[in-house]
Structure formats: structure tokens, C-alpha cells
Amino acid sequence: MTHCHVQHAPPADQARFAMPRALRDTFDAGLRRLAAEPYGLGSTPVKGDPDRREATVGGVVVRYYVSASVLTVTVVRAVYV
Image (tube, rainbow, N blue to C red; front, side, top):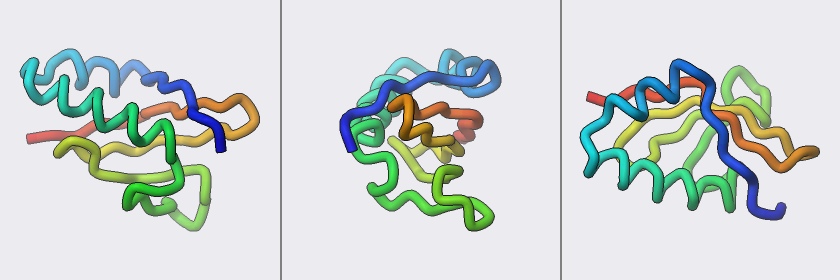
């Protein structure tokens, strides 16, 4: 699969901007790696749907959807402590 574009749903975008700068930088770098390999990097399918995934990226748990036909990864939820 070719490198995907990453987009964020509003709740994930809000969580991203609320992160401390160092965590956000690490998270963004991890998302770039995830976009290159959205079905890998330790991600797991959610409820048996291979395009609905969950992974830990830069210390942040994310849930995302892969749209292979348009080469997009949509982060719908990001949870960090």
C-alpha cells in the first residue's frame, strides 16, 4: 500500500492540540510511520473489521479508519494520560 494521508476527526484533533508539545511531536512522528503502514505497526482490527483499527502511537492510544481506496487514515479518537 502506498503512503496514506492522515486526517483527524474533530475529537481527535482537539485531543492532539491539547497535548504537550513534546508528546504531540512524538505522536505526529508516529502517525507518519502509521500512515506508511496502516495495517501494521502493532495495530489490531476492531470488532473484526480490518479497516477499523486501534494502535498505540507515540504513547497515545488511537482508533482510526483506513480508507485504502482514497489512501487516507482518519484518526477518530486519541487518548493519552
